[in-house]
Amino acid sequence: AARHPGAEIAWAVETPYAELVRLHPAVSRAIPVGLRALRDRPWSIAAWRALRESKAALRSQRWDYVVDAQGLIKSACVSRCARGRQSSRS
Image 1: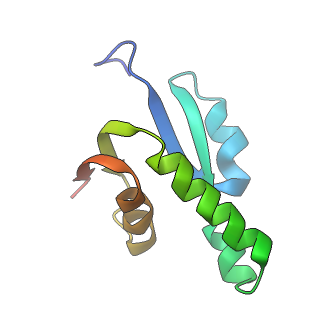
Image 2: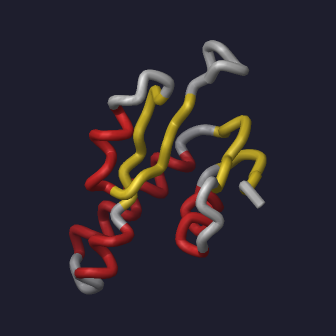
């Protein structure tokens, strides 16, 4: 945010942490992703529906950059859902 004033920064985050991420002044949008809910309740229709909504939110626009800051398989899967130039921390 300091290097690119006015940039829209969205953060895909596990659902329980979305409210915390929204508190960061540089984050304009938190996109909740319920992977843990799906792991805990793999047969839950609501969990699958929420995951589809997360994917739709990630694909709702073309992002200038998509950064996978964790470098994990699950974070790579989430970042691949977003449309934009892919980057990772490695």
